[in-house]
Image 1 (spheres, rainbow, N blue to C red):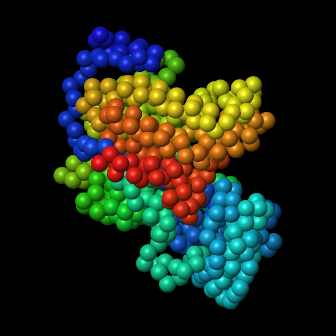
Image 2: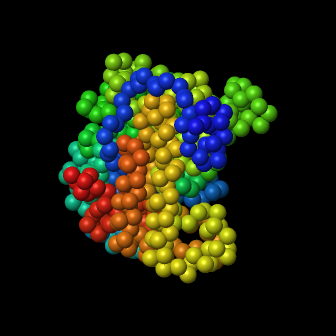
Length: 535
């Protein structure tokens, strides 16, 4: 039996479970789930993505792009609205492009706006009515990339009364959008889940938000992430906190909230104050600092954490390898303290989250043991993804070419093998969580059919193959096995990633499109009925 901390770390680095005599269990400062439950991550919001949360879909239009580059510097903004256009300039904002492939509502959209200027619409549509302050457009969705989506074009705006407060109302909601902002199919799809993780919605990864004034308010022109050069400041990323809490309240779901990596103490305090004042008192909440601070794919966040840790002298070694992890532990506990101070006695409603790395359990040990971080936490959160083939194999041209010849049944066989093997990693994290007196939850998980690393010569074939595998009815038993293993090993919350995403975007979505009938998604039926099947 392994007894020392050093020996345990070495064993974990080698992928071996350990049973070290660790620190005494934490006296939990907050809440943690004590019975198995399922949650959901929302998707990112923006033109490339098919999630439709709002009936006023201008909230998910991309921020304005200015054309007429010679005059770019003369454009001015107020709360995301164009307040002045120079001669030769026009402003463009679009929705329902790229991954949507024609899957968005058809019919008569009502476009309302305040101010004076010249506003028109382009795309797979016909303008039925055009008068000051109002357009009526008949939309016929198209999968043709050259026509797909809806674009508004502002060719002129009056400096003394600029075009603003644009609303693009889905068919049938003109009379109700003010009092009920959410799209009914979006709400129906979320109904089975008791927790909603808002990290993708909030634009946490790579966020440059520092102060509360930097955040995006609810009345900002759009709530979409920016995926191309726009006139919008890069700090205004993500859906406003007001909508996150409104949705949690509407669904009666515990919100899982993430704090940007650069957030100041004042930002954290004001965020906690807003949530405490507006979240339904019968709900719990999860708070997590940043997202996957160890992940080099989020390079700016990863570098920032390492630089902060190094500048504070948290890692005395020359390579500063753990500086970012130490700083994450330190900053997370500082964040917990601020939330607890705001919540007072209600801090018992908070699940304080420390996140580890699914494939590197040593990180959880490093973080939890640093300055007794575990004493301030309630749950250890890890990823719960399974992929039919390792990334490193799919990146090899010869292996990718071979995979491209497989059948959907072979892909599912490989996926089931990976699911069976996943139990060992879960058990290691379970042991770590128990040793530190914490609960274990999954912040993101599900099937992973990412093909971004596949050589171009094979990618189209593998994308089609993976799409067929995800549509195969046998994906259902595979998902049930994944959940069975997770909960058998002590996971008390499994947050699927994510609600809506097409097969070509990693295969993460329960639904391919927002309006997909729920009964046609095998994965959705498995998750929505999982605990009902157990009873």
